[in-house]
Image (cartoon, rainbow, N blue to C red; front, top):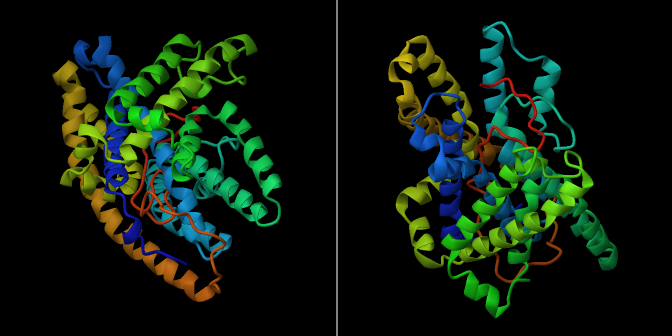
Length: 397
């Protein structure tokens, strides 16, 4: 099993993870239910703050960029899948168990069956209550890994059959549009986007970043669901969905061009991603994705019980942001060091000893990113968002 990724490290993708985590963190503040000033709740700025949750879509795009190179480098499909579980489950399990224990102590905890289901991060079509509201995206991740692994295996037997399976799996995007940028990331990794026009447009990633957010938020405002994950035939009439579908595709195009420019470090956007703080946030981004809901729930409870919300009024959200961010970063840094590095490292060593190494089937010419087994997250990973494509009920506030 290969874990050394230094030769394929992409600092722009790495720094982007930090940016996307901050986007989702801010979205959680905006959706905390705490009072805020009208400036932040209405108008153009208010709508811009609502787009923070779409950092998750960009994490999915990073998954598309890095997952196939990771699969090609793995000694076998089995080692690839096990490595993905070793990478993601320690932090997921720690957060789910922590929330469950606190809930049990308060006298209203989840059942053991629900805890067990959450520990497995089931795919999105298995709708369960999310104990950790940030963990919904991991079900998307594992489903994506599984589809890629199956297509990869079948390609060794019949390439036409593998292509047919890959094409048929795209139907999932009709019902789970938030995963659309995964396909854009795959196109980037496989170098399908080599036209001069696309690369010329990708020189301006900030523009296409803003265009994607505008289209995605516009779909929410224009649809009856007010949520882009519900812009599907399952929630809209066929007429309404088919009318919105071209804009879903347009958003995917804009997002893919942004990802292409971002991964190449183009423009001022690329320079920002090289900042030391963005690189550090990229390193702890997976833990910074999963732990903040717990921290923020505690801070919010304290603010209400101490009367700070009533006293501060519209300033409550700003204080909530300032108080929640430092402990979230500290806990994420500790989690990264002990769970992502030490625990995952020990699990990988045991897996390496227990599995026979097999030669890779094929390799990709120039992988874009060095995160082993990349995911939204990648080797130093992703996300945090209370919203889901099903909007499942959650027990964490």
